[in-house]
Length: 357
Image (tube, rainbow, N blue to C red; front, side, top):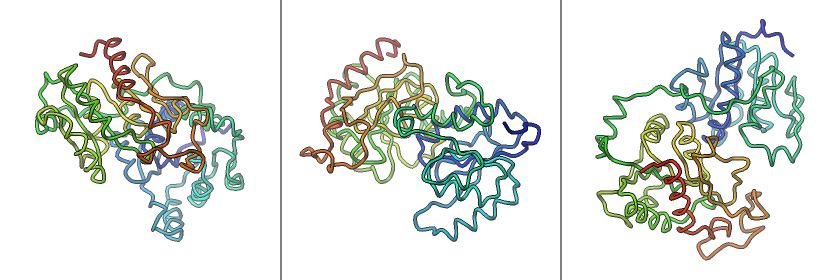
């Protein structure tokens, strides 16, 4: 074990994906508990740094350039520039060769990470991990185990509710601008995903929205990016305009606040599903190629419903249509076969269990 008294500055190389960053937060909670007086710096890639607007778990955030288009020389020089911070311990959450190399270039004295991709030469403590563990361990536990050389203690039961500071005044203004009053019941839906093969049909989301409005007299908040404008437009066309609100151009902190104000979240296997779980909003997760056992929401089991088919080939190796046949809609069968009724039934179960509406 490292000498706790000699650890003053810890640097964390965070995952790139929003969902993975969220799933790593319980590990940060443990780290902060063990080293309450150490300075903790998170190395992030845009836009995940927005998740740390409130410095509860980390003291500072440094943004690193993205791999594509930035070039390795620029990244190497960035990493060299971080040496001035004099990191005592470096923890690398991703499994990549590149992330461990950059951590070494930054000058972290003691570097910890999983023994993957032949990168143990860059790590002082390369933690052995089997292929089975990589495929079966839930990501929260997987990330937490990286801290074992630091005597991390038990895995937290839930996310720290203090991780984001409330911005009640700003939230009220945003809700008012969107036409949502205090008495409105809101279901937030994010129909997008990082890979199109993970995304449920737009038409089925549209029919689902129809069903939800009819059954619960709710307002539907559709979240998406600029690239998903057409997708959101297609879905909203299924419903009365007064019941559906499309929201884009919000940062992650603002999105998290909206999720916190929602009674329910419905979405694919994506980062926003984990953001909703983070703020303890009940969730419906639609899983096709992914596997909820490893990347499912980290929230009380009573507050979640997972809709999936659990195909024998799950979790998918992401070799879409090389290892399976595409549907007529160019979707893998695992997501194609999930019906509107299955998702509607999941909503009904959760609503009844938690008495949401």
